[in-house]
Image 1: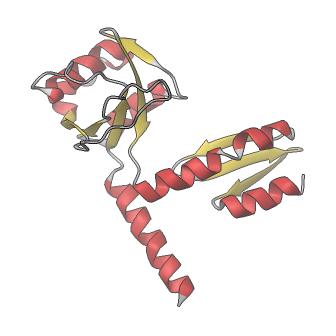
Image 2: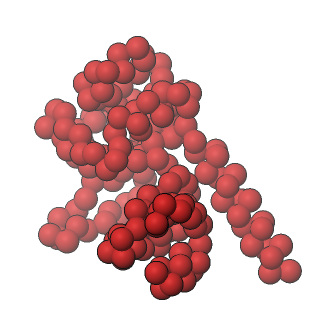
Image 3: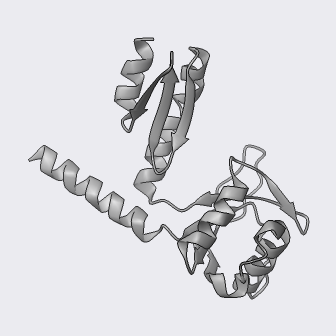
Length: 179
């Protein structure tokens, strides 16, 4: 029964992530800078921030743009309130991927006086799993491994010319303890 439940949970998470595959999260955009037209703001922002992607008509490609509706925003370590993330839904995956490819890895972009980051949009379960896997990257690197976090939540570890993949942080920890 437990395996059937885990299998169903995995399928549900996979389905939700696939439904979000055209979406991006834009972090760090100040509240109010987008005015009353977040769609137009994001289209203009993408045109300015990604001049290499001039073949895309961002007014058309950005299908929907809005801020996450949470009233309670996270506090930063300095005590100030962080702006809510913006959710961007692109018309097609190729446009979304083109933006994501130019924006990674963890590259801070600056335009219009805004420093912002672009991330893929995953469901809560996947985000938590990615966070747990990220906690293992530095310890594995300290043991001499090359480590990559792959989408949606898979750890790629290269040690001694051999490549290993982990989707479970428990198995990755066991592997790390064996190094």
